[in-house]
Image: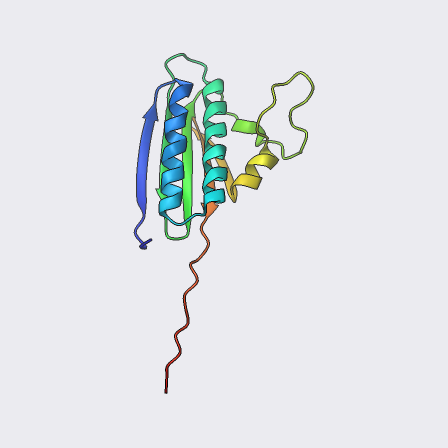
Length: 149
C-alpha cells in the first residue's frame, strides 16, 4: 500500500440487512491494505456488531447510520455515527467479562470488542454518537540485500 490515505463513506437506512454490505466493504478494505485474513474477519465482525447495536439504540424510525472507513499507511479506522441514545455501543462503558447479566440480551461486550480491534474510541456531540474502531497494520518486513564482492 502507498502512503496515501483513502476514505469511503456509507449512509445506511435503518435496515439491519444492509450491515452485511458494510461488513463486506470493511473486509475488502482491510485486505487491500494488507491486514491478514484472520484480522479482516475479526475487524468486519466487530463492525457488524457495533452497527447492530447502534441500530438498536435508535429512538426514531427514520434514523440512519453513517459509516466511514479511513485507511492510512499504519492503520484502518471505521467510525459508526448514529443519532439516538448517546451511550457507547456494546458495553464499552464497562470493561468486565460479565457485562451481559441474567435477563439481558447477550452479544458483544467491551472486552470481546477489544480482542478484535486494537483501539475503541467513543464520543458524542450535537446529538450524534460516534464509535471508532482502530486496527493497526503490521509493518511490512523488508528484505535485506547483500552486496556481492
